[in-house]
Image (tube, rainbow, N blue to C red; front, side, top):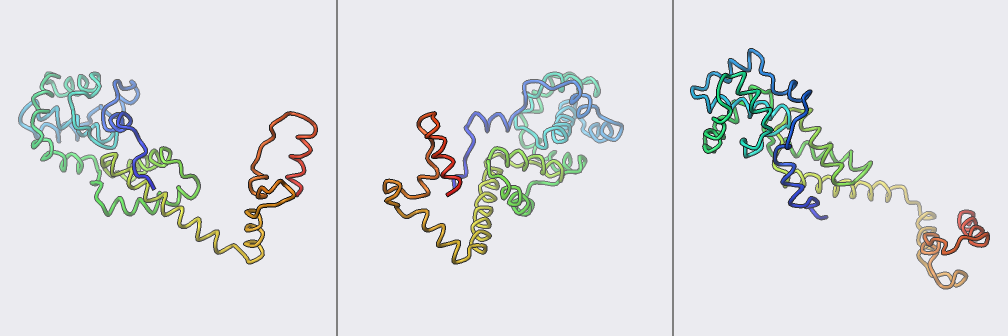
Length: 234
């Protein structure tokens, strides 16, 4: 089963920042409370304070932290900078220090109450997602449900490629379970009836009954309507 079902542009969009943020979301996710301010101000430099604050708010808002902090919605950066009394431009100083960002991520995650999206966490979610895939197996819809469940469980969202592999695995498991469940319900009589659907029938011009039942009328007429009704009663 194919693992990749999103285009490069779709993956890029999911791994980056939205161009703007709605005012309700800005007020909800980028308003630092007293505990947040105390946590953020443990960093000595203005750049580190703004960088840590942006990571913290992004994790709560998006469930992950995009790589390029400088492309966050300007309103979000400005709001945090104002709360910290620093210049919004110091985010550019922080963004050029990837090692510092990596060192800060575990403590940001801990303060936000999130866990890393480790393999064990994703394995557990594959079982949960398999149940969803038994009801529908549209990959983009399953991906959305997976992202939502990660946020509900407060697990930091891994990269999209890894999530697509989880979706593919869940769909494959769901397919296997569906086959097993169907196989357990197939009596010999039902198997024979299904097999007969695939045997060419001279009465219907040598087509199989399966093909005949799936065919659609080519004209709009009373005769065509009667043929369709005959199918449903046969």
